[in-house]
Image (tube, rainbow, N blue to C red; front, side, top):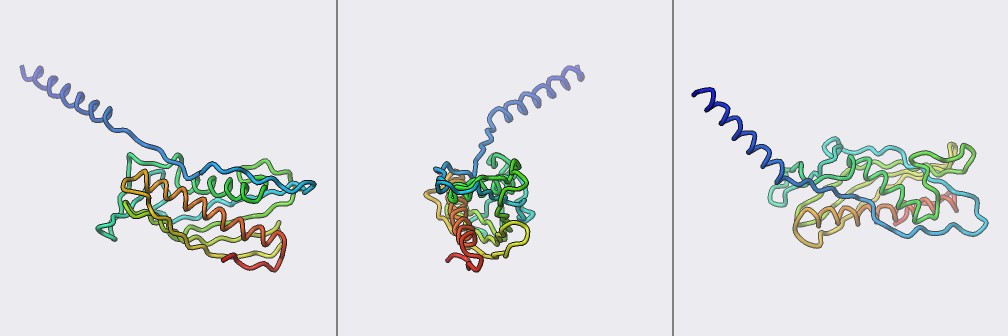
Length: 205
């Protein structure tokens, strides 16, 4: 009798576990935004960019979205059921590289494929801050540098960005992060374009 009761209890626990799993739905978000690529000038030599692996704060180096509570500035929530399509640093790197290449009409060699002799602009990005706040939006501070080839002058800049949320909820936060990333791509692309045409270029405003 005791064995039967024990088996029934185990079955009940297992059924509850399966029910809990079936009602939990993980949502995946991307930082990449579809943008039309800008055509390179006619007759121009193929132009490549490469974005190095990003440096990000350790708390963000995960696929789960990390959101700060608007009510308590010291509290952050790691959302198991709201995730980026890949790890945050990989997702951000891919979104930045494709966005920068699109703005410049350049070829993206971040993941390989660039011929060894092709001209390249090397870009490095350090994420100093990327704060997502539920119901508020996203704020970020990015340090970045660009260099033509191996021996060219290095342009070192910092970009501060803020993108408000269009409404409450995690989806609105993810959309804010996507728009902010697109704005970061545009800012870096302006600096790269300036450096490409003028070795003495300064950081874009």
